[in-house]
Image (cartoon, rainbow, N blue to C red; front, side, top):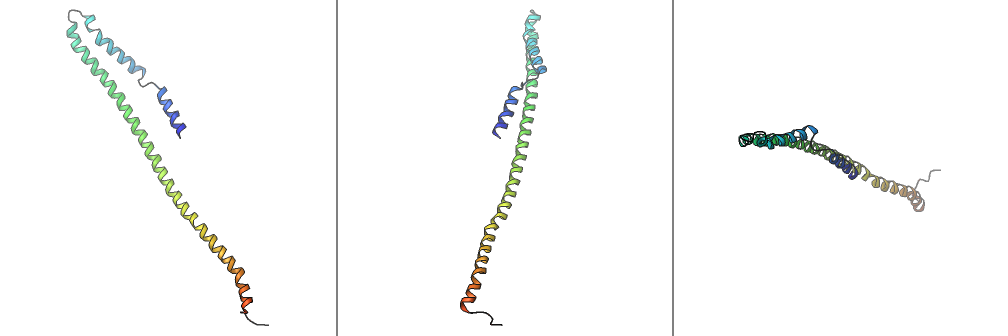
Amino acid sequence: LERDMQMWDDLAGSKPQLSPLEITLLTLSIIAASSGPIISPTEGYRISEVLAPAAAAFSASIGIGAEFIGKVAVADGKEVAAAAIQCAAEAEGLLANAERVKAVTPLCVGVGATSASFALLVPVLIEALGIGSNAQ
């Protein structure tokens, strides 16, 4: 189980957190926000007043989308864990039933051993005490 968890962790770690499209869009928003003063030096501050907050809002929306995907993945993981715990609890119940059935084995051995002892002992006692029928 530990090995499987490590394998899944390595697999998730090797996968990039952002898609190439998201990286491209974030890069373009940075370029757009920083190029405002360069594009229009006379009105650069006015354009920057619009471009920088717009780029920040756009970046935040990409981050919120990625956060949503992450939360959905965590919820899916918790659902799988809950199903595994439920399966383990059911297996524990079945194991308890098997233990209960297995508990009767010593009783059966005791009854069998006692019966075998009496089967050997009773004829000897009857013969020794002279109890029996004298039918001839």
